Image (tube, rainbow, N blue to C red):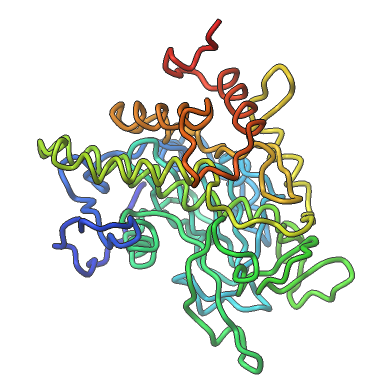
Length: 405
């Protein structure tokens, strides 16, 4: 049965801060009548799985050595090749994380599972279409009816300026000085696709090949691993998966933040008053969707698993075989730089007021009507290709997106 693990959130009485940057907002009230983050029943696969187990309709398969991990990934449609390994102690199970026992993270567009070989629980996140990111734990010990518990304790790290003020996702990089044991270093700074490569991946193992200098610890077939690969479902920590996850974390938080702000403004009867702030947030979101400030790659990147192939295979394609999930990996992450998160249920579930403005801004940029210099990286071919792909693969576009004859 679903259970809730509680803590007292510091600063819970704070109001949403009006700020020039979304990152300057430390807290968006999840208890607001328009949100009710914990009170509103979740509508995502983890909650549905928990209900089915509680009702005796299904069981999780237990695998010796890995507990419920293989079956859990299968049920959430998460590929093993998405595995990335982090040894930074940035989990509430920090005491069991080290370079010898890194934390494995598996993910897809909506769900993630964290696994520590010596941990007591799995750590899960689920993107609810309306409510945003939900956090759960699942005991690794065998049980007749394993139960997923909602964890408010996760909001200590997963709600703040680093997540745009909403319960959200975050990836960080650490600076580990020479001569200091990695497991004794905590903290760091948030990274996403805008962060220069040389500043990324402190505290992470990086598998594959990267020509650019970075802070990660390389692993590969010709490098002796500091951990026992047999304790993990894969010996890999795919750099392309890590690049993808970095983009996805901020994109997820933007979708949630924009939707929450608008829902709160509408419920409070302050939509007109909030319009300038909401429009600015949507501008930020569209710029990020189009990778306007993406840190460039100075050379080719290659992963150490099948992630590059299987991730691309998940996406809808137009008649020419193009997909927003196709990688470039030479000068930038994606061949057609518009976020694949546009296909998620969470994006589609944003208030109509938001979607109307997001679609208008996207169309103006892609059609060439908006020539703002912040979109200078988008060539005419980029804009045309993305416009054509969206027209062919994204249901529900406004009528003005149709080709003009």
